[in-house]
Length: 115
Image (cartoon, rainbow, N blue to C red; front, side, top):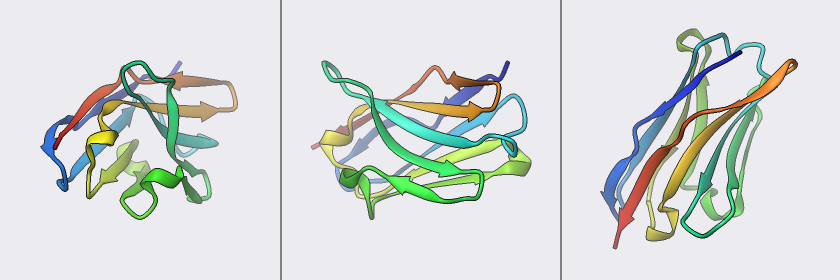
């Protein structure tokens, strides 16, 4: 069992930045994939960014060039640096980890971008 705890959400004006953190209760070195998802009101949860065990990253088109996913294995933490935020980025952001023995979600952190 792995617990994931997100933090760093909040209210920011359009054009601003936030950095989300996802701290795992166990090692993330063995995770096959770590990812950030988001869910806006009335919409389905969507994948935002992923980082593989080999540090290969991938992003959904709408955030490319603005968001950066990274990880610090020593701190057991995955980050999502979000720059040039837009009102359409408003959502609850969730961290998800994929291990050989299972997949785990965090509880989510709210990001609100005002225009």
